[in-house]
Image (tube, rainbow, N blue to C red; front, side, top):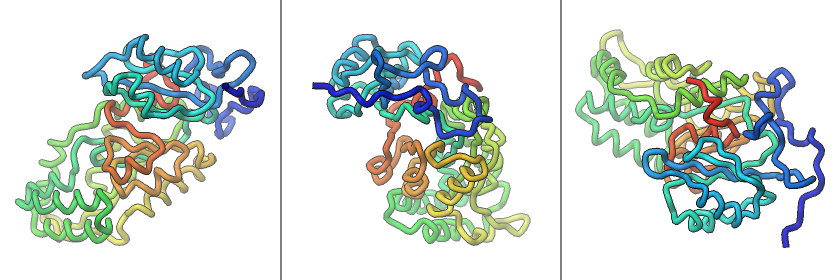
Amino acid sequence: MIVPPKRCAAARARADLPEAVGPATISSGLAGGAEHALGDWVMKFVLVLVAARDKVTLTDTMVARVRELAAGGPPVWLSPGEAAEIPCMNPPDFALVRAAIDNAPVDVMCVRDRGRRKAVLVADMDSTIVTSETLDELAAEAGVGERVAAITARSMAGELDFADALRERVALLEGLDVAALERTWRRTAIMPGARELVATMRAHGAVTALVSGGFTWFTSRVAAEVGFDTHRANELLDDGTRLIGRVAEPVLDRDAKRTALHELAATRGVKLSATLAVGDGANDLAMIADAGLGVAYHAKPILAEAAPVRIEHGDLRALLFAQGYPAASFRE
């Protein structure tokens, strides 16, 4: 037996955002910004399905199976063949949902309908907004790529203290010509969906920040390339011609990322429930735990197991679908 939730007034479905953000920021994916409802009952959750576009097409049959399993309302297509959302009263069993779609490469997310669109985005850089680990790529220039990559892997898996691991890796770069930074930058690729994510959220009033345990030399360029409002990272020290094997203290670590999230929310004048944080490793655990929508993106197991939302198949467009943005509204 399905027990409907208590009747909710329309005002209860509003986001935790200031009035200045405007209705466009807080409306759902439904046409005209209407709330998800079944008869007179407002649905509290939205189940979002996002297919990996290069691997599978999301079909009406797949969506219908999931709707039946979730006892959900009528589905809404956010992007035909790619993303759909189903209003529901309670989160379903994700294992059963995946079985219903034959374990196809489709990301399954369940979010609260209220406050769905976020006013602050805080994103990690390496393996999140860019496809590579810039420190590992820089280490390859110094001939210590394998040694540094091994330390990176252990750090991102949570096996090593991040600050100590960063100092150890940077020490191996001592003497490297600063021209290697530019060569590394030329090989750095932006993650699919990153520009759309940032541009669309900014167009709807959100503040976007790139907060990385990497280096400002790269975050400044990535932020400019993708369109972030601001960036924070560690400063890699040099003598004008070569790296000296040190970073400026204090190191921007897990706690500093969480602090950045809190500070950006306070500056924006919103609650933490109106924030979105996304990353891929152990250094992102704290900010993802505190964010209103915390997303593990193709993440290491330690983060994937802890994050409330996981993107395992699709690209960063999935974060817009999770917020109810239809593809037709995406910006670049």
